[in-house]
Image (tube, rainbow, N blue to C red; front, side, top):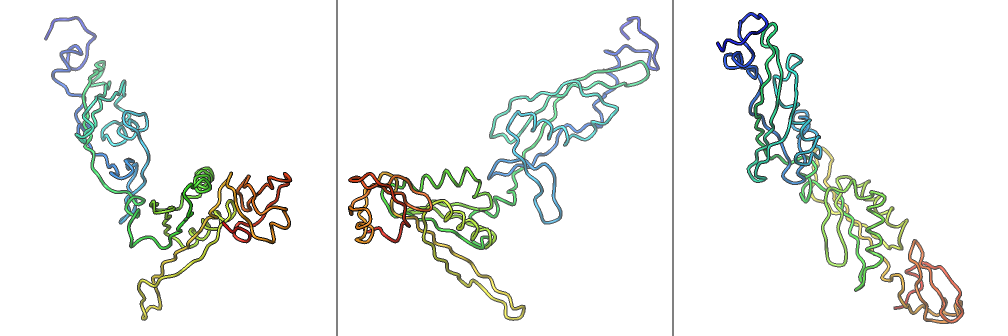
Amino acid sequence: MCGVSIESNLANMCAPCLSTEVDITDGISKECSLVQCNGCLRFQRSTGAKGTSGIYAECPLESLDLMALCLKKIHGLNKDVKLIDASFIWTEPHSKRIKLKLTIRKEAMRNAILQKSFIVTFIVENLKCTDCSKQYNNSTWKAVVQIRQKVHHKRTFFHLEQIILKHGAHTRAIGMTAEKDGMDFFFNEKNSAERFAQFLSQHVPTRSKSARKLISSDNHNNTANVKLTVHVELAPICKDDLVIVDKRLAQLCGSNLVLVTRVTTQVHILDPLTGRRYAALAFSWMCV
């Protein structure tokens, strides 16, 4: 067609002229779909069994993880097609579109290898994942742990938050809400709530009580839907507080006014007159 000398092939055409006659992108998907949770913004990596939403993973925009996920969704990228380059094309965040520019190389026929660039558009569809669909749903949680500290300055409560994050004790919670004087942690299993309450008592002085509420019952199957509520009260004292103690501890310390130096499972106090240090249970000696 163009008169350029080439190595003989079945079409007797050079690569540029052959590319106008043969489309090597034929059979490759130009439009695909991605499922994203509109709650946690994770993308669905694989579909689950019937009735489940599958496995979700965090894939930031224009990241290598998202590119790998997009390439797996494209049908037609087989061993006969060599992927040369792949890059993202910027789109508006609210457009629900992700565009990927691909450059492929393929042998159209003997001694005729073609290279072409094209754009694949991914349509983002929203579907809540299992974790987000359970969150804040009153019909799914089985137990709740209510943490309260009734003081103006919640230094012990803030310290407890850091301990929970450090040890990952909140990972089994399906929801968390901020309430007056504390927080509520919702769990899908009663055992998880009891272990969480036990974890709290191992790090800060607490006083807890539990209650069970019958939601529904089935007399034919001898089953019942019972929700557990665990109320955990933190000691209303914090580090660097001046505390008035009872008469028994005042006789031991020599003063009824002590300084709180540390709060763990016990409260560590310091007698400001003698400089002696003591440790005692929080709810047994405190007056004010």
